[in-house]
Image (tube, rainbow, N blue to C red):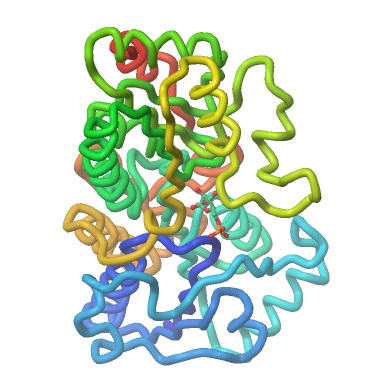
Length: 345
Ligand code: F6P
């Protein structure tokens, strides 16, 4: 059997470990051949590929980024995979002699895996995203690394914030789900955590910041990029564009920090953590989860379990139907937000 591997979407720490796990299991144990496509679907269509064997994956688990590269290039020109798009993929796969795909990616990529399999082009999904917003799995690899980096940023911002009696506002990634803000905020003891799932008003946020000051402390506010203020112009905070239609570097934090300062009279500083959350070496947890994901995906290919995704269920990596993973985002539920909201301020 010959399997094609590619990564799609934003990178996520642990992708190298996932490739290594899949290659070692598929090549060394099952006797498959594996081929990797560079920069996702770009490499697939452009004929830019590398053979993946034991030597190619030696020592890559601790490395940040991904050896194959990744991109947001879509395989379907027409959006959801019309017959022409599918035939183009089928033809190209036949040229490479590929029997099936291992697709490493988030929601969009898993949807592609589902559409391909439904069209008779076998695919298996390996879930990755630092946002942890994918269904069908308890955690995605990359999330733990992003949370560790954000928690460390909180620790560092706290000492400088306390020294100046300032309110420090940290923006983390999380376009549609606030998992990074929630976990990093909990780990770092942030006084306020603002996430897309639960809009709050500037009056309420200011009240929390003032009550922290009344206790003689300085506030650390962590905010996910997709957070919306109650009563604000949604467009300003959601699309991340400035008045000239250019992408703003810090979306929500640029709006929030001056408002907090204005309302509370407390000097406030903003930090956008940005892509620091995705760069560098993965944590041990992410390396282990990703390796096990790769192994499970290789075993699933051997067993002919196409149309599935290797999801973490408790402490086991299990193959779940792609239909369970795609279509709906895994957002922070009310009880998880209540756990932390009760301690705000
Ligand atoms: O989907 C993961 C993610 O890190 C989001 O949290 C973030 O909004 C987005 O990717 C950033 O993408 P890019 O690297 O293309 O700017």
